[in-house]
Image (tube, rainbow, N blue to C red; front, side):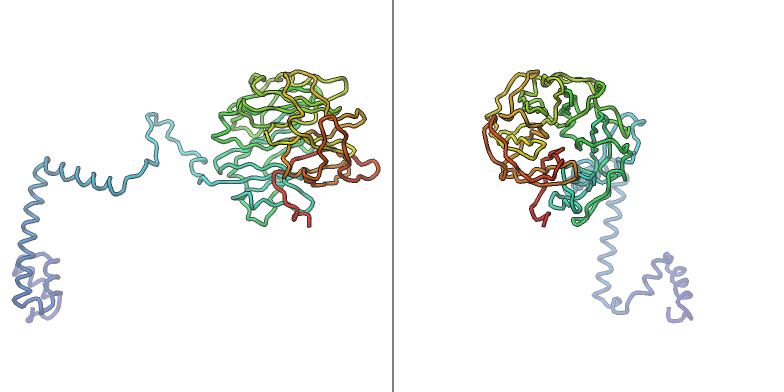
Length: 405
């Protein structure tokens, strides 16, 4: 090393005289002089002996399959103990099914979707972020995930499908987008109800009520489709869908008519039928009378009756006994001069929205509506202008009185 004129010459000289590799010669040149003292020399000798022993053991393992298999097995068992978790992939026999779709690439994320009276849709992460614009109110709220589909049922009996992941996610203060951004719905088409098609509801039913008094119950599985829209129900000429609800064959249904008849019956008396069917008769109608509302009953509900004159009342649920389907029902008011705009179910702490033919929107607390018996009188709820009438009533799933301040 001392007689060499360069590092390269010293390295090549060491390789030639000691018959070592280039890597070993580099290690010698990089070694500090202090490692050449007796103690460090002993350490190097011990390290050499240890490496020789390891090399001998490695060769024995490589030349003995039984030893190699045992070591591999023990190491794999150790890895399993330290890092085991559930399989994230699925092993299938049919390679033709091993296709990655767009849905497979969507990250599952919880979602809350709201729909307002003015057809503004908003996707957010919690119900607390539900918002609407001025003079607008949320009339539908569904919970699901980015992997679920929304179903929009219309008055004419069509149903439109929209994957939740295609809806833009909005922050808390945003009000959302018009539904027409996502669905091509005809201008005159009216959305009756928004439902979420997910793992839970796929084992349940979708129940319809029509203007002519029919009730139809169909498995939700029949509404799984890749089409943007399909026929949801078969309707007679002039008939319309009044409402759509998710049921489980254990509910009680309330139908009400414009002339003030209401019938409460068990859901299990309605046979489930296919998607493109008429259904069964829910209530017998008099000439010129028609159904205005359908609701699923909860034991803690009141029955709220609202006339087009803005008179109304709430009555205890017990006043409406359970009857057989396909009957005439019971009177919801003692006077026959009123024409009903809605007969709905609601709890004492909830709010309803009154809509007039002049586009007036009036949120009303159920607690502020006078309580009377079923056949009792109705009392004025709000003041209307001349020729103004109540044309629709909605139960508000999300509402705070602060919204109108």
